[in-house]
Each structure stands twice: as structure tokens, then as C-alpha cells.
Image 1 (cartoon, each protein chain N blue to C red):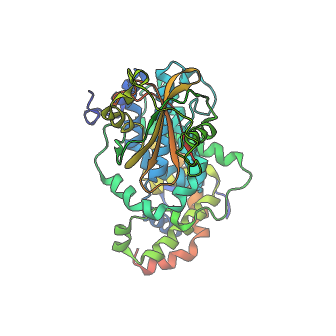
Image 2 (image 1 turned 60 degrees about the horizontal axis):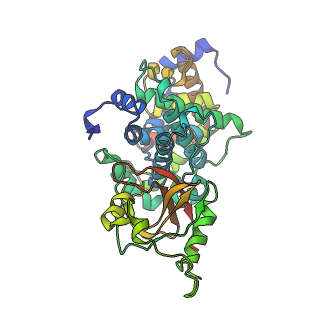
Length: 238
Length: 194
């Protein structure tokens, strides 16, 4: 194809030839695409992590790198899920596109019995959650290979629960509903511990029908109005 | 409690800059499908498009204070995401020749049923997408914005940060190349009365 000069190309834009008009018709007739829900959820989580970073004063705005400061859902580990599951996502995505805008972040519905609230004493660290949380679950007897004699993580007592969202079931449901999950989730466990040396809670959830777990680190006072997500990652169930 | 439904994009941006934790999320929800469509069509690869959209939105979140209000918020967001796409395309040595597995295009089934056999439309869509992926990135972006997403030349120029005449020439050159690549589809299209 001979490259048009700038002048000729601009003129052709206003008076396209028949072949080009046919191309324009084909392009205009392409079916619409909607953002896959998994991707939308991942970006929402990344933005929530940014918001948490801003709220805790870690100043995402001053960071000049291209990477989010907080640990967020790893897109690379989830791509295959949404790329491969597009057929199932399509209907939901199309429905979502036609629905009224959601005013607030997705409200996940907590289903089933709530998992235990633990006090592992762990000091979780950024970048290590994907190994530290499964180990905690295994130690708590919540792993598939934990057996019955390996529950080395104590449940939280009244003093530890006080002043935290985990003191009541309503507090847990209210917090979990705002963590960025969508659809139904089960609370596998909550660990009242530390993150980066500060008091925090690790909320481990599983989406209904899902196999992976999501570990979300929140401030101990997590509420529906201020979830304060400090970090978030997907993990493989131990 | 702020009712976001009552706010336009500029007001949401102002809220975000002022520290509201949810305002930017609402902006994202309003524009995500169009941003995704532009990224996917421009970059041609769903994984890279996903990364570009996420990178662009995080960048927009962090640099919201640089938004001066001289363009619509959606134009500003598109500019950031399109730039993220073009940066990714330029960084790689070759664009994929087979960009999208067929399921990566989420087809509105109801719309398919209105026009022609679903399989044929899907095939056409894939061929067009592959042809777009072969265009120089600047031309692909112009074609996507003008001929697929329906932006005006002036809007596309604002998104691409170039003069309107440049948008026209890029788009026109892209159309010429696409016409050569997709000529075999024209008969099918004509047969269907388009």
C-alpha cells in the first residue's frame, strides 16, 4: 500500500473511496465489548489499595513508579481465569453495562457460617502475604492437609476482639461487604495480627464457586464506611 | 453521604482530589467499558490491554491533581489509557499476528442475532481486530477512536494530543491499509446488504 502524503491523507479522510467506506462500515458494525468482570474487580481492588495508601499517609501521589504501592490482586495470576471464562462472564458483563451505575463499591454478600477469628501473633509483611497466610491457615488447622493436631493458632479472646470490627458478626459482615469482592463470599478466617509492624486484621475469603482464596489486610477498625484496605492478594488454598 | 448519581465527572474529580475515597471508583465505573474497548482494539492483545488500562487508571488516580478541567474527564482518562497502550506497543518488537482468541471478544449475543449469523460476525470481528493489530499504533488508535468508538476528530485530537489534521491523516492511512487487508470481507459485507 502506497503511503499517502499528509495532504492527500487528510483529503481522503473527508472523501473516502468506496473500499475505505466499506472498511468504515465494518468497523462501525463491530460488536461492542464490555470490560470483563474479573478485570473490573481487579482494577477496583487496585484503586482501593491506592485509596488505602493515601489514607494511611504512605503518599501514593508522591510515588513516581508505575507500580501500585500496596499489594493488590495480581492480574497475571487472574488473567487466565477471566480470559478463559469470558463466555460465562459475558452475560454478566453485558447486564452490568446496561445497569444503573453503582454508587458505592460492590457490596459482597457474606454467606455461610463465619470462619474463626484468630490471634496468630504473626507480623505479616508486604510481598510475603501469599506464603504467610497459607501457613497461618495450615497452622490453624484450616488447610486441607492440616490434620487435627496442628491447630497451633489460638482463637482471639474477648480482649483482642474488643475495639475491632471482628467483635461482632455484624461488624465482620459490614467490613467484608466493602472489601471489593463482588457476589457471594465465605469468610474462611480472620487473623487479628500485625501488618508491617502495625495492628491489622487479615481477612481470608473465598468467592462462592471459587477455588482461590483472597487475603485482605485491613485496619482493625474496618467498617463499611472506611474499610482501610492495606493490602490484598489472592492465595492458593493450603 | 454523597449521592454520586447527582454529580458529574468534574465534580467527582474534585471530590477525589479533596480526598474522597470512593469518587474515583465511581469515575472508573462510568467509563470502564469504553476505556476497555479502546485499549483492547488499539493494543490487540487482551492481557496487554488489561495491563495498560490498569496502569493508566492508577496513573490517573495518582495524578488527578494535574487535571485542569480544560477537557472532559473522559477525554483526559482516554488520553492516559491510550498513551499507556501506545507505550506498551512501542516497547515490544512486533505486534501479535493472531491477537485474540475468539472468546476474548465479548459479543453481545442479542445484537448478533439481529444482523447475521453469529459465527460469521464473530469471524469478521476477529479478522478486523487482527488487521487493526497490524497497523502502526498511531494509526490504529486514530481508527479505533474515530471509526469504532465514534469520537469526533476534535475529541480524538484531544485524546491523542495532536492536531486534528494529524488525526485525519493517521485515520485515513489506517483505513487505506485496512481496505487492502480486509478486501476479501467486503464482498461478504456487500452480500449482506451493508
